[in-house]
Image (cartoon, rainbow, N blue to C red; front, side, top):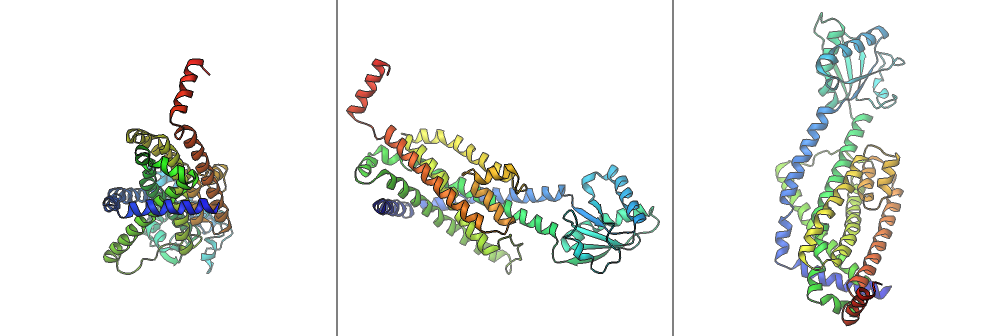
Length: 400
């Protein structure tokens, strides 16, 4: 085992040095520029779409008669404005409209509340996060005026809180989706390069020389970790340039919403889950690429491989809001979608032990894939020469 690791380190150092100091590595660093621009544009569009279709829940802590009028006003306005243009109303009959501690009800209701209306219809008080209150106070004023038959204009008083359970959930969900998008973009850009890693050495018969001196397991491990090291170097360069660019544009560090596990651990998990996603797909691609004999065959395999990556990502992305449901557990357990599903959990759940189990499971499955790829490579590629040709002729003659 120690000899295998030592041999894998030699192969990794050889391939890593050859890649990093090659002339094409500079152009490789420029490669993600256009996908990054597309990803930023798509993320902004997705954020706008989420804002357009978002329908928060607003608690109603009014007298019973006024609460009924407000619900009827919403139903009447929804026929003209559409249901999505107005917040959903949740009656809070046990809450005093003049309760001085109305903020405490935001996270104790049966549903996560965006804000709470209290006071009276003539002088409503809207309590919630600043972003949510400013977004919906105009609609609340319209609802109140409609409930009062439009006799007098209504001015909504506001009371801001730091954050509500609903706003925290939305920001954590946005962090989960952002983490998944970053992982899939980096994996799609970088992992596919492993497909062509062995083609040149197979063509030059170098792989046969290496196989005669070093175990095939060490060759596969070494090449895989060399490509991972190259990917991490590229990510480090891109991150540094991105940080410098943001620092020049934005003054100061923005106050970003914190994921459930906190930003330091979340960033560490991003690196670990990218590494595992890269190793899982890279080990599979290395085995597939080892079967190919020409660059054309590698290009032919690229499309189904890319589509497979997208299907795995869609599975994890679909379950990001379904924590604990059977489909989400499938995404967590299935090795190729597990890194994407687990980074979403890191943004929304604060228990850390599950990430240790997930990383161990992904590492074990990576070793299984490498072992299986080595077996296929030995059986289908390394059997060459007269004995292999004689056996093929004998099979054709006898039909065995």
